[in-house]
Length: 186
Image (cartoon, rainbow, N blue to C red; front, side, top):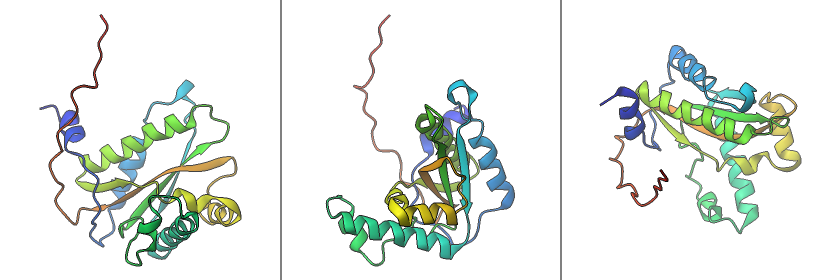
């Protein structure tokens, strides 16, 4: 099977990571693949914030859990109540993908970049998980302070995040895929 197709079929979300930090050259490759994602009008409306400081990753996790607890309506509120639950599953690296507020299609463009990150990580033998439970942490005044602390440029808003690291578990095989979702008009 073609290598790209194999990577796409085999990539799974990993929620258990080794504590060892990923190699600098692997991180550079992943970020390079992110910027090769398609974007409307080639605007490339993204900014990538890489966090490898455990204390800051833990702070993000706690901030998100606090906002989820306050919400009370979210189906994730109960998860947030669990003291041992960590939004990023204790991954050693987190990438926040932010989109330009001026980019009309920034959300879609940044989603494509996020997918490239996930696929590049799999191709390099790394584990990844697309984690959006952190997004409530970026709301309100505390969220604005967090955005400043992370050095996210003015005019950008966090949209997605990814946990990255060496796999601490073997990924399960893909569950069966729906085959009734195709429609071809010729």
